[in-house]
Image (cartoon, rainbow, N blue to C red; front, top):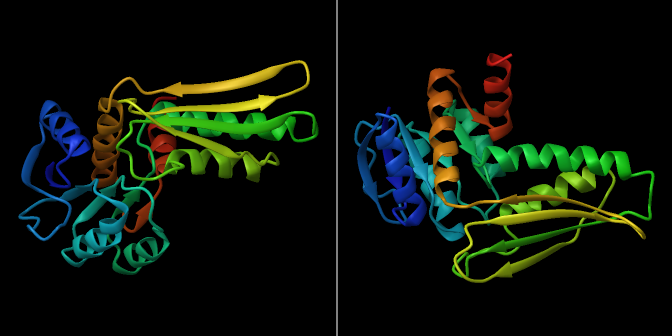
Length: 225
């Protein structure tokens, strides 16, 4: 797989390390814009800033380059529509951790089971490193949306401190008992590995248009049964 890295910060470097360890090639890499070109890349990994995300993705679409984007804090709906119109593979996710993807489903299931019991109040606490731009995180918003859709609105509390790569706790608190679902990231490597694995699937499955990280997870899970 030939890849271009748009955004070469901590996540960009982690993605590069994962790509090389899995036998792939990085043909181009650069800063926060896709202006440096894609060369002969098959897929672009876009991890930049909320302000640059949409511009980068649109520019990559114009070059008919598949895109895996993990930039949060921007509205991806317009780019999803454009990807469908152009038949360009596009996978955007607020989090590329397999554990977080499973956490969202487990949280939704718990919220649904507890929906008939108003005494259980839902909430989410998320903690990230002090340099993370958006708060709440895209992952926390996704978890909150999953809980609300299942009948349990979940307000979010955000902490920005130290070097924590990411920690999310979904809490269902009752008068005499509490249920807590926790995911802790120990390194950025889990996000990079998930993004690269999703890109491998994106190309191998001949995807055209926008897909979700859940589509990747479901497809891989079905293969293993």
